[in-house]
Image (cartoon, rainbow, N blue to C red; front, side, top):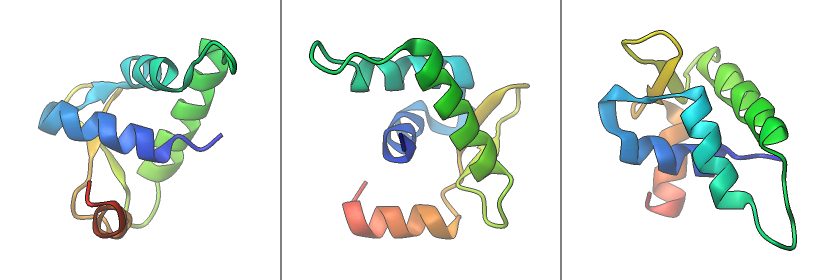
Length: 90
């Protein structure tokens, strides 16, 4: 599953300090989990970790490493963020 928009919204709220992947995954899990479509935390964590890591390594990364080890923040200067921001008005 693609959680990119949920991650962007969570990191927008987090600000410049960013969040560790485990907290991002917890927020995404709480957002997507429902009574009729339950999802396991382990699967969401794995997907979030993969999404963040892949986007942090690209040419114009959507997510950047923050000051602390394991923390990520939003790169507001990336092309991908600008496209999302223009399309959704994030």
